[in-house]
Image 1: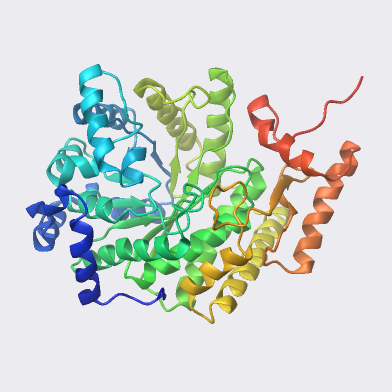
Image 2: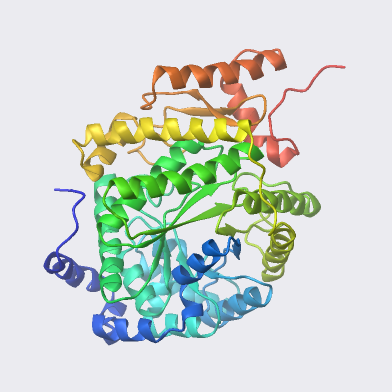
Length: 486
């Protein structure tokens, strides 16, 4: 039965036998834990993801990381080296969709077809198929830390292979890599599977090795209210800390209103640390990641670059430890390495210009921070109540009942009853609450803010507000205003 309790080493090792038996690369002698510990300890400090993040946080600097991954290893190494030369402080490896679904035979065919055709026949790098030694080659080909980014509900074997290969950061969680990505994966199962991943990190931490874990902050990336994404990030941080994770990066996807975005990152950092202390996890380092705009992009490359630059300004002024970049090819498809490099350069240029500037304190900012914190506390209290103070149990029940609800998610374990919409300043509010675990006072605040916008636009409060807001940014506006008749 699922519980939020640290796994014993005996239980973990029994589960590990099953995980390593799921594909032939799990038999690799390099997956021997003593061997992996020795290799990870041999890595220089500047290639440790978590330590580099801590240095950036202490120095109040914002670092840059792109997304990237192709199926043929030689091309993938070439891509990562190009991104490093473009100024990336960290490089990713985005994993292909077959691997995310643990369909390794199809991933193997995809590698063969990609080599034969000279075209990428997978949408990422199949790390499990390549195994530890080949993943080591990727890690050793660059001089910056590397992170696995994927979207995998059951990411256990992938975690084993990439950590043993010296990839010192791993993205995802039992909620954030399930609800936005999968339809039929139960939360009870995915939280259990991610407890495995986090217990693996906890084991390495016990050997004196810092490994970074990063819950996926944007969720569905479509006008998600900050209280929902922040709550999920805090829950996943707490679940990870219970298994021994000590270096956590919580994330947030750009919403578009500068005050709200800065407030959301500030609230996320502060509340994650607060809840970790309340849980008795006093030795966990918390950093933040700001994701550049995750919604629809304009087709024009010039306009897309403008959006990337705006995202960079907000990410820098929010004080986020890291920014995940986008490219001018977002509306077209998978970007070229050149387009990816341009996104890095543009972001880095803006961040460097702003490195000695801070977003000014104001009553407006403080009010928004406090509003987000109140909403998150309401949701967290409801989760803990449902679980009788067991966070894992409470989380499963909260999703079952719609007490936590992610907008536009495909999972059938997510109610999908809430609708977001922007207020008159473009801040993301909640239009339809479903059974979301918020107080009537908070609900009335959201209703009031959305009605102010509807009145300004001379129309009724309705689902059309949500529809218009989804398409607005790609059409050059933050708020989806109706066309005014001349």
